[in-house]
Amino acid sequence: MQYEVRRRLFHIMWAGNTDGAINFLNTLGSDKVRNSRKLQELIDYLKNNAARNVIACYTFRRKLGLHVSSNPVEKANDLIVASR
Image (cartoon, rainbow, N blue to C red; front, side, top):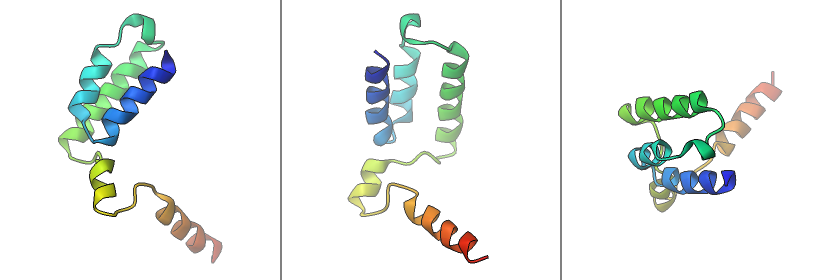
């Protein structure tokens, strides 16, 4: 059950569909939610960040040939810190 919820949410968010994710999370029954406070925190996070346009649409980024991970940034940070 938990895997299915995560998988579906992942596919919704991959496309940057925060409204769809919020709607999906709001439809989850109590049988699928262990911690309702954490669920509400996630919904609030999505609402706040969607309003500021900071949630990425990875489908679009991939079509543009842009990175969809933080690996290049993490490696650059690793090299900078290692040189100190």
